[in-house]
Image (tube, rainbow, N blue to C red; front, side):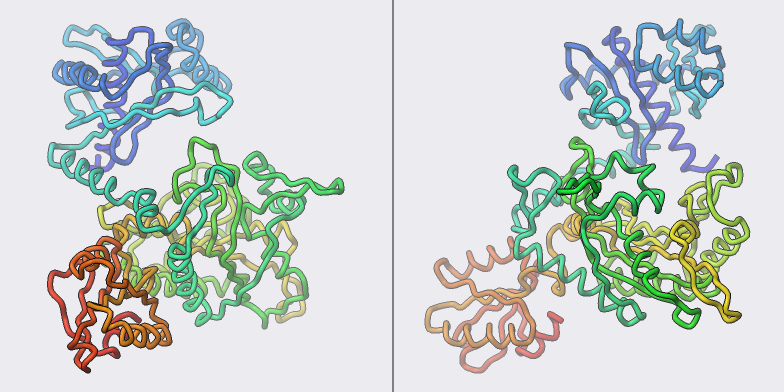
Length: 582
């Protein structure tokens, strides 16, 4: 067993150890589900009229340590649905799970915690896998309490979710706790307010952020950089409306799966509209607006546009999870033989963009090739031969780009394989940002064609691509990655000018005009406070460059510049400053 699987089993077992401990302290508790997570585990509970809080963690952890020290063996057994219903008769959540198993026609799997004398001390409904005994769950700590609806449905009961962390040793736990401490300092919701990047309004609604002038500068810098890189590879901007008839999504297949997650719009007529949740079906209609020849392909569309999704209120989180998300979206219509070149172009764009953001670095990202589950071919639409070719082409293009890929069976979309890029931020958290997805299904659903060399109609392949994903989520990632100290090219204010006294105002005004003419975002901090206080204020605002202007500078000498985070000043000419801010 590799380390990753061993940690998963350890964390899965830890959730059951916690449940056993809580059951000893709260015998009447009802239990929902509780999976392992990337860093630990969680479990949902119904505590009735006596809620649980973090103040209870000490007692729970004490019981958990007792269970670990007893080193109970975990033994798997199967029972019938009828036996399971009798065993868990008092727990409505277990009964709901058992009924789901019954519908599948399967037996119920249990795990017993067995003591040295062969007695089952605790039993839970679970499919596994687990470690061999409770003594193998490593170092653990309970982290937090939150609310969660049963099965994520707001019409179901609200349960208490208890989170814990589990690591192979104490060093792993200490590193995780340090990461959580850093994450709290870097929280984009906190920094977004402090740095005046975005705000929210109860009159507008949750999940609908409002970007201030400073926050809009960051958004525009991200958007402009992606667009510049795309234009160089032949992409062209398009623009689409924000509402459409539901018929579009019925044809694409999204309606059947996502209709309950859409915002529905009713106008003066009987036609039912929705706020668009994605852009790809619209782009197919631009392609379909005229006859296409093989000579026209590949055709590359791109735009930055808002989409709308009716997320659960309890799942909204700052900029990370919103109802209005701005996508840097792009779609390519091409022939099978062009897939490789087009995917290589997207990789080039992603490399250039994420190199500039600082995310693309050796060892800082992983690439996953998501392919079909060979055991469940019925899950996927399209010709199997095309799938074989496409998966091979994506693997080849990644190898030729010098990327090592991890093959993930069963992670492909139902309409085609994909490459997913996961990047680590400054404190080690992983974020999926860039995606390259092949699609054989939508061209078929919309009957998209082109005329080949023989004068016959052929079906194009559609490539979906995202470089940053949604701008809102990407901004949340960058705010926390940089701790609000953006690189100069995307900083809301690139330079603040600090005249020492009023006698330096005229020179400062002229310098600001010169910098702004060169495209630099420069502001003046007039001398109402001491110079030291103003320098500290510019550092607190995380401005990349602070320019101190006194007699030397107005007399023709070089500029005195303090970079963000630096302890010493440096000397620059105006030209050198402009170059540093490019």
